[in-house]
Length: 114
Length: 114
Image (cartoon, rainbow over all chains, first blue to last red):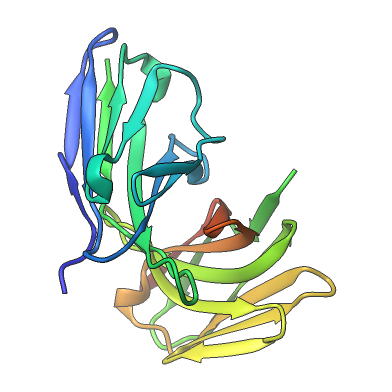
């Protein structure tokens, strides 16, 4: 069974540019989560999809961040325009709706804004 | 405010030795507590997950304990191996509709040396 995949693995952009991160969850997982770790800090929750619906987006830092999950499969997280403080590692995780809610994490996308 | 604190921040031990990592939390409403292992450049991988009623759980050489009254957990690693070198993250889950919202600790960076 394929795990959670994320693309790209690393992105370097200039302040003011736009970047789109992609996450492909484990097939059949209705729950999809985005998290972020900024330098020296703990991983923090950004938002949670159940299928194509945003269940909880309380962790999104501001309106420069837009997450979508069209069709309830893969998800994208767009940052527009990027700021220096957006640098960090963005993780995606997925889980089944039923059961122990175990979350499986992808390898992360390292975003560097210069 | 939901918080998870871990100690020590970092730890160096010799191969073959045991070690214990600590976690204190204030998360409500509590659903479960997880320990994750994160290798450099990879996403977190689940080691154990414990609900309120469980006070110990093992996964090979890893044994986690949970005291829900004092809101403390520990992760004990037996007979450490070089491959145990990683960040160990305590994560506490609050139950929300349709899934679990995770609060992460900053992790304990473990290095196992010859």
